[in-house]
Amino acid sequence: MSADGLVVVRRPERTLFILGCVAMACAALFMLIDVGGQWDFVLPFRGRKLATALLVGYAIAVSTVLFQTVTGNRVLTPAILGFDNLYVLIQTCLLFFLGSGTVAGLDPRLLFGVEVLIMVAFSGLLYWGMFGGARRSLHLVLLTGVVLGVLFRSLSSFLQRLIDPNEFIFLQDRFFASFNNPDQELLVVSFLLTLGVSILGFRMLRTFDVLVLGKETAINLGVDYQRTVALTLVLVAILVSVSSALVGPVTFFGLLVSNLAHALVRTYKHALILPAAALVAAVALVAGQVVLEQVFAFDTNPRVIIEFVGGLVFITMLMRKSPR
Amino acid sequence: MIEAKNVTKRYGPTLVVDDVSLRFPVGGITSIIGPNGAGKSTLLSMISRVLPMSSGNVLVDGLDVVTTPGDELARRLAILRQDNHLTSRLTVRELVTFGRYPHSKGRPTVKDQEHVERAIQHMGLEALSARFLDELSGGQRQRAFVAMVLCQDTDYVLLDEPLNGLDLKHAVSMMKQLRTAANTLGKSFVLVLHDLNFASCYSDHLIAMRDGKVAFQGRSEDIMRPDVLRAVYDLEIAIQQINGDWIATHYR
Image 1 (cartoon, chains in turn yellow, red):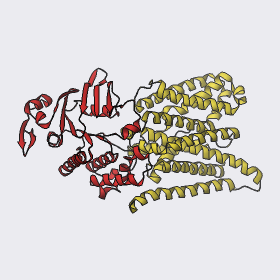
Image 2: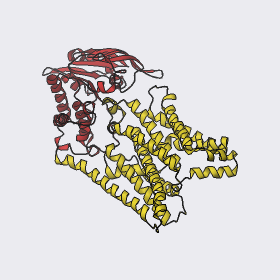
Image 3: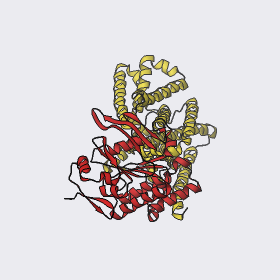
Image 4: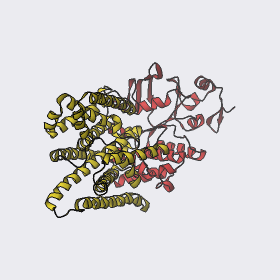
């Protein structure tokens, strides 16, 4: 191994280390700023918020990076498959058919389980059901996702027009969920699911690296392309459900995080790019939450900021054409 | 041995490859020639399982390419297609190391590293090995991809227009390297070539395709004939024997 080979390997790791330090600093700042003596209340309270932010950041970062690897496109997010819209539709249907009283009384874990199941089943359906196992192009799957996403959104807004305005406010509250009121049990379930996905994904890390070379080269190198893509889509679906269930749909955040991570570490190795993306997400969410609480005094919603910045980045990327 | 049986590719009503049955000779270089749209690349893609076929089957050493696990085939057969674009930044050495993936599953051993260095040397890429692929010229990138495929160290290597974008010097050296690999390592190459004279000078066996079918096949002297080439290309092509090679002059 020559010296130049080592430099290529070492630099992303240094970036990762710095990112890790920044993330820890942000977390410490978030936990310790302006505590005012009530440690026994503040620490667990903020700890839950922090855990939610980290989990959500991780889920969004990993799902977006994997989705972009599988599709070979850096401007896509899992939202294109209509996952966000499906989440909104599920919530709307529940409320429409059961009423807010029943929904509020439901065990959040049960609700969550059902949501995850539906979303995974949906991604499976997109992949296998629609095409009957026949080999079709991934782009056709994406296009179907786009069309179905529009269908879901139309259905949701149709149902939302029919329901009682009070119920609608209850519903809207769910879509604008924030880090401020995490459900502890939901957090545990989400954590376990994310852990499961991570273990599965960890075993596929090197396969993801090969997918970067494109479909044909991956097949040539012996990757079971169909199976890998299908499995990755399921993992992505689970992660998206986790983040949606905890804080609601966040479209642009993943795009932001994934591209920042790629710009920072510039490698094809998922063993490096995935942690980088997760750390960038953690820094962005936790620092954002500190600013939100300390500067804006909870006056604004983090989603508004994320979508605004994310939208700007997206437009910039499109203007600059096909980013690497 | 690679054997294609009744291989067909259909897009709607259009037949791109029409019921082709072929046995590719073991060892040496086999070149597929023919006009644009004859189905050469499509046939190569189907043989290498990159493209599903509409009907028929392909056996590699008796293994059906559709049902055999991908990683097992990847240790017997390698393919390089024409257009290779990447979304990530890779150095030449990183790309070539991917050629060892079927053997090491992403954890290259010392032996794998030796293979990588040898392939880099073979393709004359030593000076470029730490450069990023997007900083190379088309021909240099092409050589890097060929190095990756050679590094895979398979008995059968299929290359779709390997001379694409190469200057004369590198085209000649590429063909010589393939020739050496075929002679000394006993590998079998199947190439799609557009340059008739390269095909004629370096191939042991030529396959001429037209309209999705195999029109002719045989040794250079059987194929490099005005009447045969007229039937394949619809073009008057004069043939001359120069220093023992059959050379086509089709420029005027």
